[in-house]
Length: 287
Image (spheres, rainbow, N blue to C red):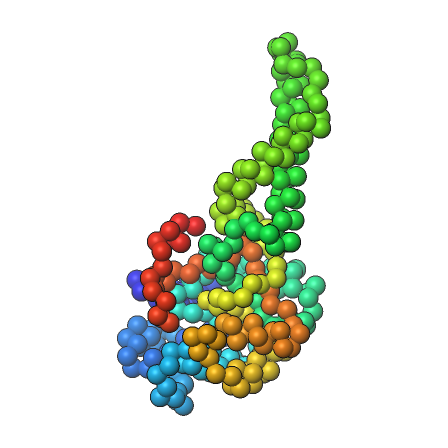
């Protein structure tokens, strides 16, 4: 099954029974055979005023602007734009609804967009403040669990009249447990840890500041789409100024926030970039 068909199948299944509006934007016209096949099943739109530009970076911007304009006319509260290789996870819709209802109200109207994916290879432990806090807090929780287990084992062993020590240096035990927990998390790797949390419960999905780059799947609130369209129409995208960097620049100029869901709600299943960045390293798909 082709990438696009997988993405469409994943979305159609989860959108069934909701009041969401879904359409496939065919940016390649009659040459995109897979999109043409899908047109018999779902709504497929195209840009009748598509320019004859051959610059792939300009075309990527034009495609995004057209998609945003089409969605803006639907007057939906939120718009999500997927690239053709952004595969939604099985729990995508339920998690997204939870995030919009429980997490996003804290930000009110001061955010421009919410990224639903960020490359796992760049989600490792780093010196960013919120990631340092995450590592320390998680290690403290692990330390508490290990210390509790140690005391429980001590009580059980004591009742069995073993030679297990009667007393334990609490400070030393907590410190060692904390170091062990932090080392385990560091060795496991944050991307794998996030995947584990995401599979456990939707309560482990959080909102954090989004780094620059990467737009396989992005949610836009209705309030800022018009200004974003006007800004994108006023700039020229290029190799040194691609559309994802243009989005970052828009955020800074408007004094807004760009946010990201952690863990990811989609998988980026494409093997090669359409912008000529070459094939992905297979190691990226281990997460």
